[in-house]
Length: 146
Image (cartoon, rainbow, N blue to C red):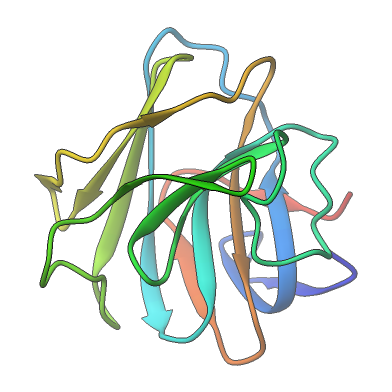
């Protein structure tokens, strides 16, 4: 998004809006993770290059499949699944995402949350978005402005 700031050599994201990783997920099975540096409104998942990174929350159309800060997984403005009760990520937690081009799964501090979601098609990229005070650190991907 136009109001997102990427610092620390593409590893830290803050501001308002979303950003895509610098490479798509081509592997049959992919994993990436983020550490929540500060809480607020945020989301993590996968998106196509056509996703509107200025329109948050993502997951409102068929260009993104994300887990939102309330634990709901959204695709095409429909809640596809939800984290188990009492499992919302907090400041300092690591949120991991696996994606096999059919199903997205969420891990919290290394533990599978057993809340798969699917629906998105085509070439996708890791995506993260936030609003104002949100900050995250990417462990395995770098981001760029589109």
